[in-house]
Image 1 (spheres, rainbow, N blue to C red):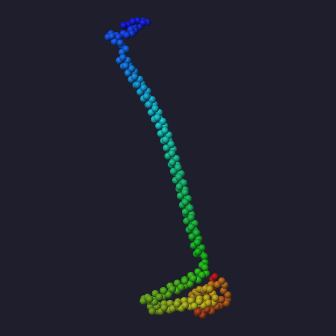
Image 2: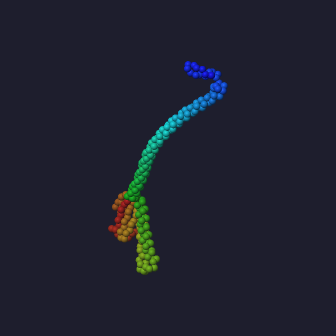
Length: 243
């Protein structure tokens, strides 16, 4: 049923329409509520999705910014590392060169010291005792080599009899000279001289006495022994001292 109120047609309360049913039924109310709920949920989902998108975008942006910072730091670190590596390498090379120079300087100093020691030893005169010992050994070696040479001539069948006889005479002469030298040196020592060395060369005789100074009396004693034992003229006897 419709009635007019303020020139508007308004259904009367409790009116059920044509078929006697009320237009504001419970089913319609539930349906409306469901549609409203679905709409509300859809809006909420849209809002949540948008908020989630904004949050992800913000996180992605921040992550990208952090990555850029890390990349920048990485580049800077890489450059610094190269520079540091070069500096360390340069320092290590300098240290190595210094050590090599130190070793070389020590080696050179050692070599120089050894050379100086050798030069000093070479240039230094031997002691008096060493002089007499070494001189006597050199003299004996000379006689031994000479005798060995003549001995080979004696043993060589290709040599003539005359050559072998001559070699035999030379060997006898050398042995006689050696014996005379030994007797003369022993006699000189018995005259109060500590040591002496006698060199015989053909008609000449050289005698070195171990004494600081030689008096005329000392020279006379030595000459008498040399003339008698070595069968040399007094003018061919040369006497010197070494102390």
